[in-house]
Length: 416
Ligand SMILES: [Zn+2]
Image 1 (cartoon, rainbow, N blue to C red):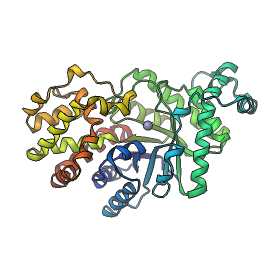
Image 2: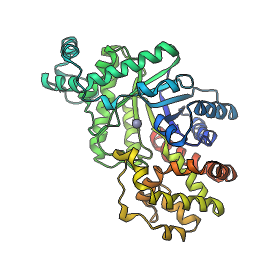
Image 3: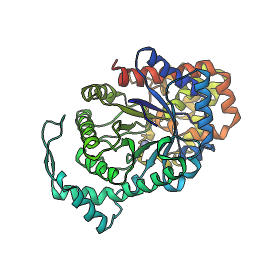
Image 4: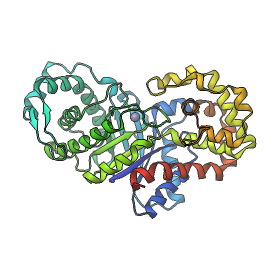
């Protein structure tokens, strides 16, 4: 099973927007760019919402059927670990092996010695096409990177073996993810990681490193855009090199776990992808849930009441909601409006405060982050929430499709 050059992870917490999400891919196809949709939902999201992995498969299949989509699509067991894998085996054909927690675990002296001996030709000044200066890999750098990442890649190997044993090697797409960690991985470290991935015979088609800068939930990229671009370029060059050197799958590409909406780096990324003729997987998730909330607010009436209720509750349960996302939300609590203030808002004001339009004076990135992690509250509303989604389906769906197409696909995949 081969992942196409361009693919996009679309998360959907409440399994109501599959068609609206697919419509954005259809709009891209009409512009001549094929993007394979990948419906992703992590163990964490399933636990918080109270759903099971087969619901994502059902949603994806139904959306594809409704729109007669004939191109590839996938269902991603997102951020799974060995202990959370089994529930996803039947319904998924894309697996994101999350081994970030094993970064820094001791690989043991034997594994270290074997790796260093096998890959000693990487040490020195490495000329990699696409990188201006040779990549300097000293003995110390290589040993340090191996010490840091070998155990994590070993764990990815164990997860892969379990998937292979149950699903077979040809029926799945494999991603290795190390993004949910504090420190970014340099291009040289990525090379070492890829050597280890090849040693473990993991047929990775995408790899998600932790990039420089902050990838907070729901808001734009924060950090040195220039440096990000330089590293992104170098990562693309390293991947092309590693594919040839280590015999990794020839469609191996970067996966960018965006945490939603990293608008300021999309156009530079597009340029890099063109330069290297490289593919990319862009993973988004919560951006669709926020569009549901925007749609409900914009619909007014009971929709707006629900949106306000969720905000008021989110404010009173802020610590609980942020806890599972501690490393990826940074909320300035003093910038959050009081429930009383929000209660007085009309539909347009609420939608404008939440919608990710940085040119709008009403836009509040702190409120947006809080609501991004607040989907548990909608899950608790149960049928009342999903009934509202169904009642206001046209306005909600329009927001979902427009957001994915206009704010994500156009800048990143179309370069517009
Ligand atoms: Zn991630």
